[in-house]
Amino acid sequence: MKLEKIVSYLKQTGYVFQGSEIYGGLANTFDYGPLGSLLKDNLKRAWKKRFITESKYNVLFDSSILLNKEVWQASGHLAGFNDPLTECLSCNNRFRADHLITNYDNSINCDGWSNEKLLEFLNDKKIACPVCGKLKWSEIRQFNLMFKTNQGVIDNEANLVYLRPETAQGIFINFKNIQRTTRRKLPFGVGQVGKAFRNEITPGNFIFRTREFEQLELEFFCQPQTELKWFDYWLEEMKRFLVDLGLKKENISYHEHNEEELSHYSNKTIDILYNYPWGFDELWGIASRTDFDLKAHEVHSGVDMTYLDNETNEKYHPYVVEPSLGVERLFLAVIKDSLTEETLPDGTTRELLKIHPFLAPYQVAVFPLIRKRHQAKAEAVYELLSKELSVLYDETQTIGKRYRRQDQIGTPFAVTIDDETLANETVTVRERDTMEQITLKIDEVASYIKLKTKF
Ligand SMILES: [Zn+2]
Image (tube, rainbow, N blue to C red; front, side, top):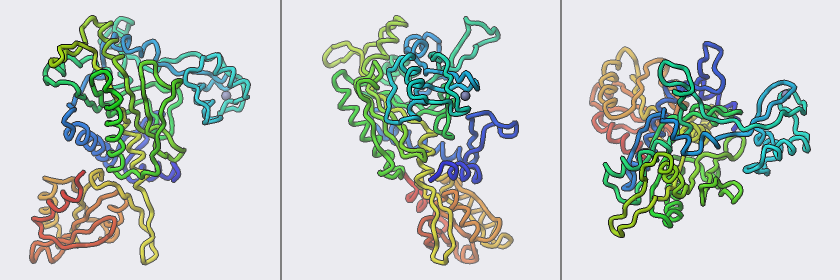
């Protein structure tokens, strides 16, 4: 499926709009419409349910976006969170040198290449500017990806703060607070859902790479030497989550980082790739980060970040395994695997979003068959169901058109109120994928749909 088709579907249905549209837009920003914001919320709820609520190991956390700038000194982001930037001296557009090279030949991995090596490669292979076609690259320099702003009324270096480029550090600096107050023993994990910001040189592919994005991160703390066992455990949980959400197995693959690709602090990293419209690309990463983060914060803050094992009386820095997922990347994958067009027995076609019922923005739509005659009863049913489910009320146009509209946006059930309802309190419940209809008592509907839409 082409990306253009997905983008136009999402815009037309009210899932995703261009950011600041009436002012001509702001590049690489997107606003999530009534449907998109519900889907995003459901993706986050699914992750929290699986990785926090249903995990005996993990707790939830919510740190601030603005952190003391020493945090970024300690984490290495101030010195090392850079991308190699080059400018076309002919048209002045700026590019990531490593992206120019992988776009030229995607079997090449430039991780760890020096600026000089990148520039030499661009010139040797005559990789021209994608905008103007000239071959006039500037010297490559390292560009820091953190967004800067100022805290307080004075605009100077002293009150410079950064928007967090990841949620993880907020967890690391609170490790002692969390461990003390929850009285958890190792192993335990801390999960966080929240926005992060990276001033990417070349964002793109719609909502896949944006400068503002939302992360679902888990930092799992464990005893040294057990980290690779836990790495495998969480990798299996990640796979299970994606398949349970309805992603197609054939659209998922894995990439393990080799020596050259591994970050200096990691002893194992695997990317889960998804088959996006432009090919397989990173959806979810899991990294074994050793004890790098806690030790770094101990050195910079002077605060002891060790854990005391009461059984062995040993003191050590826990090791960390980090599965890190982007909400928008998952959003795009779910839409791509759910959007289909079906030919019906009568030869007509219907556009159908075969999304997992738990993720659907609305779990059920309520329709009065004839507005004038069935409206009051339909409104009463809406009121009843909306206490327990996400419900949409629709009384416009024919019943057939109303069904199609719900198929298109992925609503798994539709409840129709007709004369039978007025006579004996029953309604027709129609299922999205099979289009089969059953009759239920009004007071059975909520529990029936809850059972069919759970995750
Ligand atoms: Zn150019």
